[in-house]
Length: 168
Image 1 (cartoon, rainbow, N blue to C red):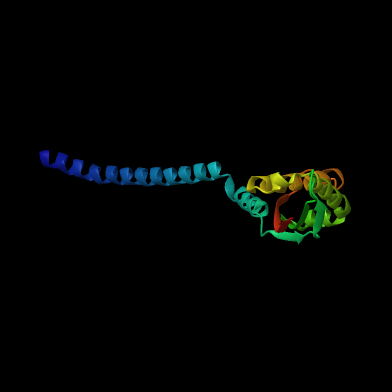
Image 2: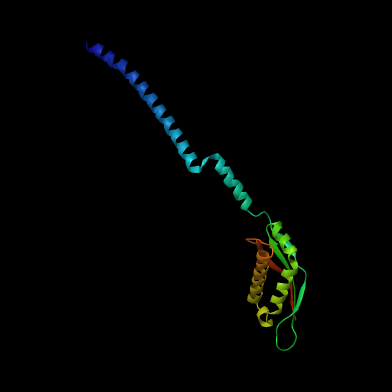
């Protein structure tokens, strides 16, 4: 009888181990499915990821565009001997629409730059800091004109570069 009981126990073991293997496989598949589902939920799915990549590509500036301005010569404000300033500049932006707006409103921009340059003291423009401050003031003037005259909410003029700067 002891032998019959041993045979019965051996017969039950394989059935239990098969059930255990099946349960482990099902649990593994469920875990993999859950991890994929959570990953998709956290990443927002494929469509939103593609949209985010497109938005990033649109926001990233392609390459800088430059527009040369005409040479400007002014008398500097000074007591004593007459002093002159002659500058050539280029404006830089990342979109053609900004450069087109600068070209369209060039008379107003040129006027504001002339008035600004003529009001500068010779001593200030003799220093590097004075030149940098002047560059920033010119960029602010142009952006102001583009806002008021051009109706641009956020003018995207990026920089002003002096290509010639002569004082006498």
